[in-house]
Each structure stands twice: as C-alpha cells, then as structure tokens.
View (cartoon, rainbow, N blue to C red):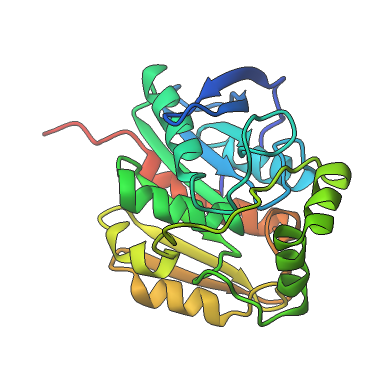
Length: 265
C-alpha cells in the first residue's frame, strides 16, 4: 500500500455505451475517465436494485478515478439494461462483458469492485474467468438463500412472490426472474479460493443490516493468499454506506495492483 491515498477526482461526463453479454443480454454502461495512464481501469458492480447513477457509486468512483478509469454499469434486469435479473447467477456474464470491452479498448490492468450482490458476482467472476489484477468485495454474502436478517427476509419476499416482483419492477425499475435456479450455482465461499493469485479485499460493516460480519469472515477464511479483511466500525450496507475515507483506502489498496510493471534492470 502506498503512503497516502489518492485524491478524489472530479467526475467526467460519462461515456455511455451499450454492450452485449455472451448470452445475448444488452447492458447499459458508463465509462468515467480519470488521471491514469489510460491502461488501468476499475469495474464497479452495484448491489441488487443499484445503478451506476447512485450517489454512493459516484462517490466511490471519484476516489478510484485518482488511480484508474472507472467503468460501471447496470446489471441485467436493472433500469435500461435488458434481460432479467438472476440475483447473482448469470450476472457473471455482465461483468465479463465489461471486462472484455475494456481489454478491447486497450486497458491492460483491470480490477473489479462489487457491492452486496455485486460483491458475490465479482468474486465468482474472478474465480470463473480470471484475468483481473485485484478484487474488492464490499458487504457481500458468503452463501445463497440467507434469511437470517429482517432485510434479507424482505428481499426474498420481493424476489420470490409475484407481488414482490411487481413492486421491484414498478418502484425500483428491476425485473427479476420468476423461476428457481437450476442448477444452483456455487456460492462465493466455494469459489473464493480460486480468486488467487489476484489479491482479494473483503470489506464489511459491523452495522450491516443485511449480512452480519460472519459472512465477511467466512469469505475471507475461504480465500487463499493474498487476501485482506476490513471490518468497518459503524458502516452499514453496500455502496451507499461506503464513506469517503473508506473509498480512499480502497483506492489506496488497489493502487499497487494497477500500477505499471517496473522496467527490468
């Protein structure tokens, strides 16, 4: 880690682009350009019902722009993206479409940062596809079908019941599948060991109303080195709970992984 965190950068006008995933879903994406050399990029993956337009996402992006360009997007089934949300399963193809697009544009050093559902997705993506320099999982679940908190019981009601899916579609602009997973995909803890050799940072708040800190410990314990765990005092859930100070430290943590390779002597 470097001595001082990068300073936040002003947000540029987002470069909007439609991408198509390998399974044919149309994604709404936004590329923000920072002060990097032009070959480093960070992919930001929002939580369930989140969007690249969220103030919390933009706040994190401002700090990351000090070290890299930032590309964020709306997952399938969210707002102007096509398809249906599968709540963490097929969304790995969304992240891979964004990463592949960045590679096509000449970015050679790419990291992923995910929040809540997005945290599960970036862990699974790194394990299944590889090719990223570092992974940050913020407020992520360690297992599927967790119902141990009131917020998660409400979320499951929204996903599993017709009236809940209607509410998500009308109030949150999220369209969710109405079928069960078949087969059930490996959960983040099962795939965490395969993130290595990319470093994994697990960030979790001790005031998270969705997933208690045990989820962070399980995910971190399952992963191989290099890995790091931050339990943030007083922090709530996902992108909206990430403070500017925490976002700056995440950028600082990512910076070595995104730095150009030292020239050979």
